[in-house]
Length: 393
Ligand code: SAH
Image 1 (cartoon, rainbow, N blue to C red):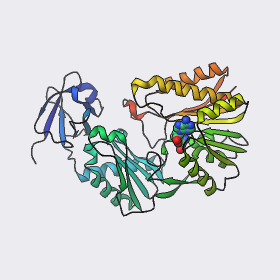
Image 2: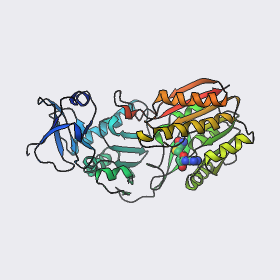
Image 3: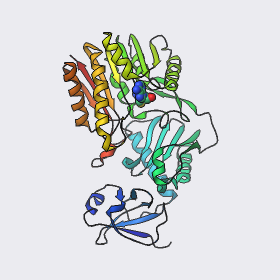
């Protein structure tokens, strides 16, 4: 093998990366020795020639190198990816996941820019950086060997790929199959459209949180905004709600939610409407409508730190409107899915909304994403989802 290209870090940068952060930005590099072929494996060293890690390089990306291994003797080849996927699956099983889980959660599995969702016998892959994309065939081989899946699908129709010089694409990575699959979760069934659904088709990151509403929805009139395919609404129906109304702006999502209600025999209890939740919640609180439980799981509102104020305003507004619709003694279930709003800021926003609504809150639970999306301490962007239940007094 030819000698590997060597990337030497600036003196000040080395500690962050040596302490476990996997990203090396272009302006953090002092020198590069050897050829730079986009996507190649390189060695990263400190300014005084101490080994830091082995990773993949892409000069077109703002993140020049992403580190894959901290073991100088580890060779990055097909067997490496097989071993990493097997290990990630072992961990998920260890903490109790059997059918559905995020099998690979990028950086949290030391596989930067790789997402693999397991929907029982079906797998959905996203390779979001060039250096990972190059190993797609190795991932597919590993999945075939470890799981003997019924199908593998690529959802690389994601804009961030363009920052890496990669095209947006989607399609089968196995023999073609019907991409409208059905999964089971907490005793319910859900249609998942892995070809045209949002992200990988289904939000596995709320799978543990959906069980948290079990007791508070019993005999309740429930309103859910941002319901997507009705996952929380149907859990509410399943756990004994009297009535459930789910809202989403996407006609497709609402159609799928109605199908999911039918699949679970809950079409009498759970109704869905395609509307803008901001408008509906505003109008209904003016009309004096009241619910026992209001659930909110809005989108990120912003993707960049510069627009963080936009996200804060959005979260505050929707939670204020939601709070006004809760009967005294009822419950607000509220979430935020962007790592740009850290947990303490999220709580602060809900606090401001409660103050404006002149309501007091009693906290029932405050959680993060489900455990199949591990949080690595020190790697901020692995902690992204906030999930809060409060009693609204
Ligand atoms: N709770 C869902 C995920 C919600 S994702 C689950 O666990 O499966 C956020 C949803 O908000 C998306 O389905 C999107 O279509 C919807 N959405 C975005 N803006 C909206 C708006 N203004 N009004 C209603 N829904 C909206």
